[in-house]
Image 1: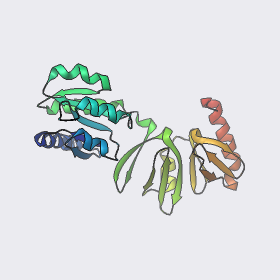
Image 2 (image 1 turned 180 degrees about the vertical axis):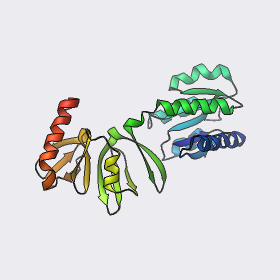
Image 3 (image 1 turned 60 degrees about the vertical axis):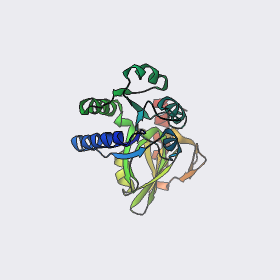
Length: 234
């Protein structure tokens, strides 16, 4: 999980970071935390976060406006507002807040909010991977293909590419067989992103291509046809 704390009070940074690290240890999860002192700083970050703890009242750019702008580039982010003013809770629902926590934030309520978030995540549709930059949550529906690179694998999604220290066989074991298939010794493809194919190659919806190995041709055609019939997506 990648979490951000956006608050103009350093004391609140320290409090939330301490509670998040306690949660990490208690739930045995990978948790990475970044801290921002203003909404502008958060919006300038190139990273996307799973959870943002957002202060309601900040100078210049308040929490509501920061959240509204953030939603433009990351609609899936969970926002948990923190404020000393309980009456502000109603306003935060304008930007789809997940929870509203009143300062001082209690350990019990923060843990409950994160537990509810974790339960809301459909892990059957997610691939959790680790790279040198940390742990990432990838929607399987966003995954176009995986390509072998020595003992590592490159995972290509609709937005990014990730290099993971797992071989292609290990990645294959993590993916649902009805939606993904190895079509070559070096490629696993996501059926939902296949636009066209012949006996030799696949063309994806981002115009990239992958080879089809001679030994995989018949099985690929059959499996792809089964996918079309099952999900009625083509």
